Every structure is written in C-alpha cells, then in structure tokens.
Length: 236
Image (tube, rainbow, N blue to C red; front, side, top):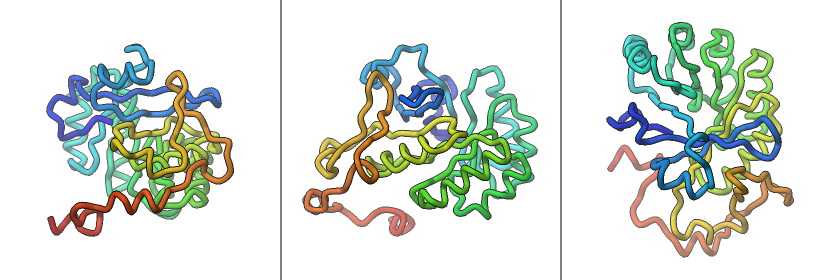
C-alpha cells in the first residue's frame, strides 16, 4: 500500500496489486513496493495494478481536503484516512472525488458504530487479529447493515493471513483483502503451511483450523536481536 510519507507515491512508484480470489467477485489486495519487481512474481499484467494511498493520521480535515484536491485527477482505488472524529471524516468523504477507507485502528463494534452512522467511509477496514475474528464478524455484519463494504487489515504474517482469509471468505460485503508479500527469507520455516497463490489468486485453505500453525521450535531458533515491537518502539 502506498505510504503517505513517500514523496514518489503520488506518481505511482509504489503501487498495489488487486487480484480476484477463487470465491468469485471478491478481491485481495497484495501490498507491493515495486510493481515491476513483484507483479511478475504473481503473474499479473500491468492492467491489474490499482493505485491506493494511505494518509493515516498525518493530517487534519483541512489538510486531507487539500490532498484530495491535489490528486483529484488520479484514478484512485481508494484513499485511506484515519480520523478521531467520525463527523469530520464524514465531511471529508462527502467532499472527496475518491472512495474513502478507514477505521483500521478501531477496536470493538462500539467504536465503529459512530463512523457507520456518519456514513464516514466507503470501506471499513477491520483488524481481525486485534479484534478477534468473532468480533470482526460482528463488525462486518454491522457494516453490511449500513451498506458499507469491509476490508481486512492484514500487514502481519502467514497465520494472520490465513485467519483473515477465512474472515474475508465469510463476509458478504468484502471489498478487498490486504496481504504483505515482502517476507523474511526464513518465514516459511516457522509455519506448518504458508498461503498459496495460484495465478495471482489467494487460495482459501481447506484444512482444519486456520490452515496453518506456528512451529514454536523454529520460532525459538530465530530470537529477536534487539527489543522491539509495540511495547518498546517509543523507547528506541
């Protein structure tokens, strides 16, 4: 997904690939930093490239409106915007020439409802890993009642991808699914199975459970080199 901090993102140097999964009219977003490098890996032609931009919390209402005006001539798949104020985000959406996605940081149905009532986004991004798939299904059902599509927030690893694949397959209002394809060299060693892509399509696993399990012995063979993660990043 395009990073708002990248000066080149506006001209599309960093792009994202959208592919259709095996279940029909459902789409899977594959994060991609170099479309010329990764597109060939997935067997996708340039015609399958969609342009997205993630602005995150990097502006206020005025700033978002200026950015949307500046990119009005681009054919954007969506513009992702996070705002603490549902009414402000609804106002932005009504001024936007592009579809708006949001809410990847929200937890629980109660936090989503004010955004649904304000019709603040075209696509609600749901983090099923932090919310739990059971709670994510409740949020997706509420989004469906408000005529809003959903997209799983999935920038994690293989287990999260399998969890989100099941969540996505069970959601009738699925728009796309994010998959991070920039992996570690030994990533496949720490899971019993890895996501499979066939002709650019993410295959939903048919095995029991989520379709993969972490291998604890293999994980211990790759300990963290320095303290990090959400609990430590402010100290670095």
